[in-house]
Image (tube, rainbow, N blue to C red; front, top):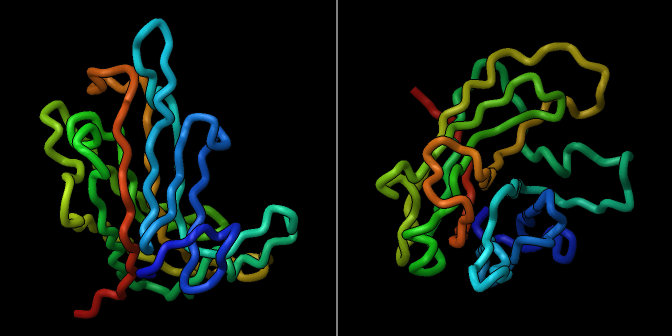
Amino acid sequence: MQEISDGLVDTVGGSHIVQGLSNNLFTNVEFANGNVTVTPKLAEANGAQLGWKNELIISHPGTFDPSRLPLVDLSQLYPLTWEDDTLYEVTVELSAPDEIAETNPPDLIRLGMDPPIQEVIALGIITPSLARAGTPKQGAPQTYRAFVHGNSRTLATLENFDRLRPRMDVIVHEDLIFNTNPANLGGITLHNMTVRKVRF
């Protein structure tokens, strides 16, 4: 999926969803030039900027209409067929949208895949550590990869249970032990998301 658009507005060309648990009270979401950028809303209190303190933002492919809940076609949200004993490579291209995103990035980036039955959840974690070395920089997007083994599908009565979706989560939590700043001021830009089968 090379062109990222708001799945609630544009369902053409591999649309994506960005879900913030705060219902965008604390998060700016911008779709532009086939990319999506999420940044904290920088409200001020007592002269200090307040960014993200506790936030979860999930990016995944699919078309989604909340008015259809709970009757959602899972094949629209989980676009990949789950093949037995297959190794998948999930790749995202990320960059820091501005200088503050380099020096004050989100606390965690999780990358991987999951199915609708939540039986196989594989999410690798990327952190900035104390040296801010692990998260993206400005300029050209950097590549991040996770490998997911699908194991064998099991029996389920749910229609289209045997499907997978790639996903990337951006997580901020003020109580993380390595979090030296209780409010995160920097965001992240997702340029594309790709899944490949690994052949030996």
